[in-house]
Length: 385
Ligand code: B12
Ligand code: SF4
Image 1 (cartoon, helix red, strand yellow):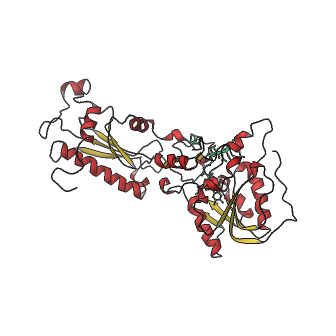
Image 2 (cartoon, rainbow, N blue to C red):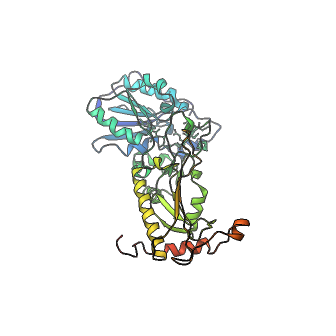
């Protein structure tokens, strides 16, 4: 528990082409603390990108913390991928040197490579700086083409829902209390100075997988329970969660956005369109989300026109982060509609007298307005779509 297995200088074996070994290196355990912690929650660092390994590669997972002895060496893998954290960087470098001296190509990736690439570089044939899901297939293709580069970089700005499910089948099932480590979101809206998310230059916006994907992953792994390993599962705005749970003020929704009547609505059919994933501006939307935004704008404004069978008037604007060049994680991108019509195409609400001097009067409830909009057709009353 306190010392890693010996890496004997005498041992070697033939290199097996198209065989990749993924290693989670050993770190010393405190005999007085819980060993269970280390077998409870398998890291997703390796399984997440393992899922992108091409079919014709043989893949093996090795977690030194399960105390199963020496890491595999017969045959020698063509590629060894090692995840590196500060706490076990020394062991990772030792493993890297051992495999390299026997002819394997060693790829180092993970948090410590991200924050200190120059420290890791001497120990690797190649560094994976950033998201392994994007980098791993490129690295293996270059190994096959004999043109492995010393460094590959990727940010974390892709659509998280496009990532394949982690390949949990490579985990030794009986060695963990559960193999189902789940991750629903990556990143966090905060940037606490002591957290790796505050690493200079790290581009990891808050990204979410669809809840159905997480449920499917849980069911597919057939374990009695799962452990969430998100950076900050609660980082998504509480308001949106409550709205979705409640559902009463939702007008329509799609994968990227939700249209709601806010509970504080003052104008009769006031609505907001909120992005599900945290984005601070239009510029941060992925391509799929831009399509989702166009879709929900169309569906909401067709409902507006259908409400009183008229070209429905409104003021609408997008709320986005300031353009002062600083990061503004506190801004959540949304659109806000303020329509003036109250009872028909000709009877509108006026904000006058009492309302201007004292406070707004609600002519209809937010829930009632949402229900009326929700129940309208999504086909325009004049025909067409
Ligand atoms: C599961 C987990 C654990 C588990 C297992 C750890 C393990 N190494 O086996 C347990 C419970 C044992 C644990 C313990 C500790 N942990 Co911990 N843990 C996590 C947690 C919650 C999830 C890790 C994970 O699965 N992430 C998801 C994967 C997909 O992300 P990723 O690791 O960044 O991997 C991606 C890339 O980096 C890259 N990549 C990674 N490796 C490689 C390798 C190659 C070859 C390639 C190509 C790419 C690549 O591809 C992946 C996909 O994009 C993270 C928080 C988090 N959400 O990341 C904290 C976290 C890693 N833990 C942390 C800490 C501080 C600890 C402890 C020191 C706590 C303590 N005081 O005891 C101990 C240290 C143990 C140790 N020596 O590692 C910090 C590390 C901070 C830092 N800068 O290093 C984190 C980030 C939490 C935090 N925000 O503070 N932890
Ligand atoms: S994950 Fe936690 S520690 Fe890191 S920035 Fe977010 S709130 Fe801070």
